[in-house]
Length: 155
Image 1: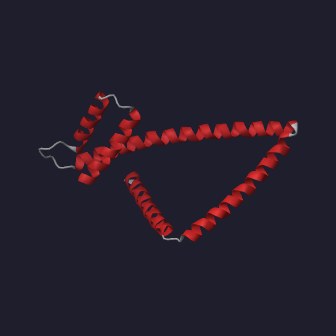
Image 2: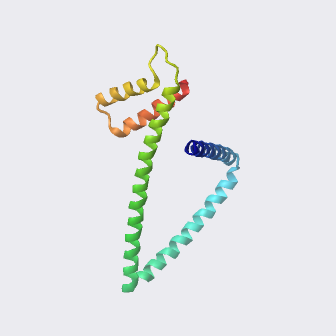
Image 3: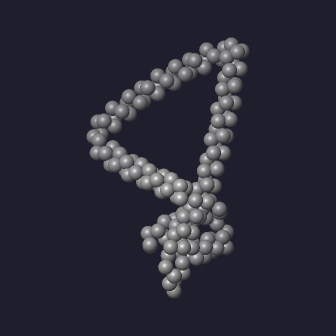
């Protein structure tokens, strides 16, 4: 019961965040072009200053052997963090797939039994036909997500 309540609260928080983002984008579209051009100019100047400062700092650091070692260590640290972030993303994709399957199974169990095919049967038949046509697994995942959204819109 606690898990179900926390997951429903989590979904409510996600929906609230989505609504806020939609409102933010609507408000951003209403801003005048002068605002966007002035923001762009300010960002470009800041980026150029940062590039010049960073370039100078790297040149000074690479002149000494200690600085060169520190730069190499920094490069290794960035690579390790990138690999760690990629593995987390992979784990999140796997978790999302399992949550989507559970949600679809729950929705399919709630559908009334009629003479037509259930939503899960439609989804499975479409996936089977996609596999027989030799589509890639990435396309199948995108296809199953679009099928799930179609099923939700039908309900």
